[in-house]
Structure formats: C-alpha cells, structure tokens
Length: 218
Ligand SMILES: [Zn+2]
Image (tube, rainbow, N blue to C red; front, side, top):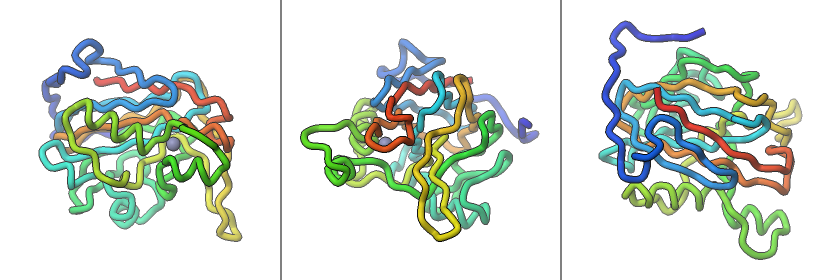
C-alpha cells in the first residue's frame, strides 16, 4: 500500500557533480557506497536488483550533517523496532526525516546492528583489507563534499534479516529479498542519502555473495 500525504509536493532535484550522469537511477556497485542529495518532498526507491543483499542506509540533514536519522529516536517515535509503511524515521533532534511509503519486500529489516567496519572483519578472522559499510559511508560522503562523522551512525539496515530470538540472541540470516524488491521512501527534509551495498561475505547475511543496490529517484 502506498501512503501519500495530501500536502506532498514534488521538488526539483538538483544534481551534484557526483551524480549528474545518473541522476535518476544511481547504481551502487557490490561492496561500495554512494551518496546523493535528495530534496524535501522527493521520493526514492532503494532496490535490491539481484535479491539477497543488505543495503546499509543513512540520511543526513543536508545543511547540518550533525543531525541525521537516528535509530534509537525512531524506535521511540514509532514504538516499534522498525517503522511500518506510513510511519517516519526521525532524526537525533526528533524531526521527521524519512517517510516509509511502501515496502515491496518480505518486510524484514534491521535497525539494531552497527554497520560493518574494519574491526568487525578483523574480529571475524579476516587478515588484510576488507571493504566495509563504515568506510563506504566515509568515501561516499566525501564524494559529495560532506565531512564524514568519525563513527558511522546506526544504519537503517534495509533487507537485513537479523531477528532477536526468544533467548535474546541475534540470528544472522540471509536477506530474504527477491530480485527487484524495494522500499519506497520520501525525504521529509533536504537530505544527503547514503547507501552501502554491504560487503559482508564472512557471515551469511548477503548469502556470502555481496551484490549491488540501486537507488531510483522518482
Ligand atoms: Zn556492511
């Protein structure tokens, strides 16, 4: 079901140099991240083109990246672990920043687990470099001229299947998305959107075969 407010207005998208070539559909290659500015009122899809892939997603306020979507404030705002269609993500100042309009997936997402980072892979036994969502966030923000925070905020882990179990442990399961599954979101503020195609290939959340993600600006 698609939820749309009567006051919704389409706002022209202003491409940055980084995304001018692919202003409408932004390809996020496997194991990489991309950032794009999205104006308030604009809607976009985050798509899993091949299925079985987690998309770590962040939204920063365009003119003040110290304010960003906050998992902990959002859980309080919606009184759930993850918003349902028609509900909003809010910032660390409790302002609505994203509206989840439609969820065309099995409805499985995570907003509890930190982004992967080099230390996570070292802990999993990886020797040498390994791409990570935290580094992808940094690289993507720098590409659009935004200073990256020292530590990645808790991401919106779209499509990630890591449910809490009755004994309070976390299960690390493959993303249940099929090819072409997507969520449709609307920016409630001018934002910098960042999406990382999670490079996790040590545990099975991406079926140990990380793939790409697509962002479609509507
Ligand atoms: Zn990751």
